[in-house]
Length: 76
Ligand SMILES: [Zn+2]
Image (cartoon, rainbow, N blue to C red; front, side, top):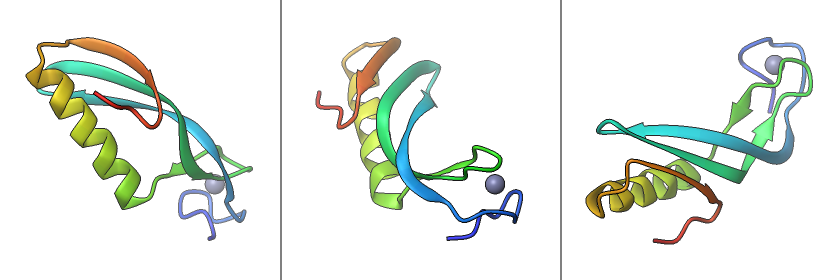
């Protein structure tokens, strides 16, 4: 797909690091599959991937975790 931020390049499949904040807690997910713009570095996540990250973060919040760094796919 064409990058919608810089509108100059086609995105390539790759992985990125995502930081997610949920109810005051902060989670970092590494090696998340995404489409990456080689020009500006913007990353685009699939809705399914975003959904699974949010689900993992919510489960960690429910377990009392405030800060965590996980490798994707995160399992709780
Ligand atoms: Zn771009």
